[in-house]
Image 1 (cartoon, helix red, strand yellow):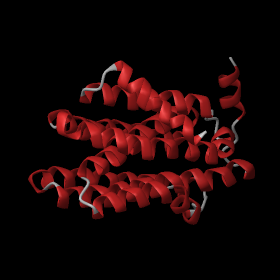
Image 2 (cartoon, helix red, strand yellow; image 1 turned 90 degrees about the vertical axis):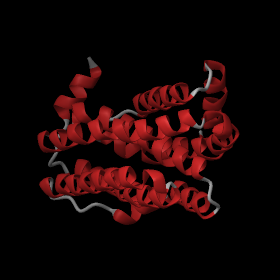
Image 3 (tube, helix red, strand yellow; image 1 turned 135 degrees about the horizontal axis):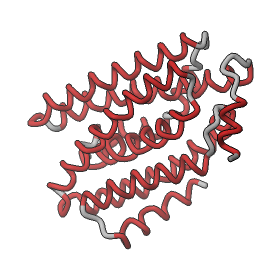
Image 4 (spheres, one colour; image 1 turned 180 degrees about the vertical axis):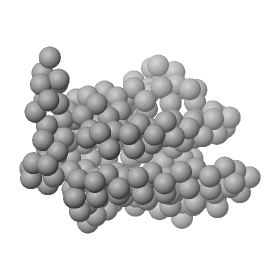
Length: 231
């Protein structure tokens, strides 16, 4: 029962814990802020879905405020420079795709990769979170499935014409997830979150999304292998 022992040993007021938390907290705050911005941009690219995308963006803003409150509860100041740097490559790829009008790539980055990443991280964090953060995170993760579902449904309805771009976007962006997980492995471990569990949960959520869109198991295995380029 090693994980239960780890949870029992967590001291939320320990300076080592707080130091690691300052970076993890910044990542989730920045992730929710960028998700807000991305959904606003997607609303411009997809005017017929603009109202729904604005609704999703407002949910992300609420999540951001919730995670800011989690930091204040532990008297930790988030390292926002670290948070912005953490998402820089994925953010840059989204911005570039949006400038080029590549809606499918933008949906893959935000609605599939970032949402699957968030779902994995939040699900692994909830059992080891302090009581205040646990309550906030449990509420957030329910919303993230709704956000993931939006991207799935749109891409499923446009699968044939989107497939080639989805595969290319996967090839370019999935390796970044591994780099991001490697970058945060030590801090996450201090918070009781193991990298192997994060990878497993991410690949389950991401693989299920690809399956729901229309990819075969063989396709998903091939596409998932591109993530190894980021190891």
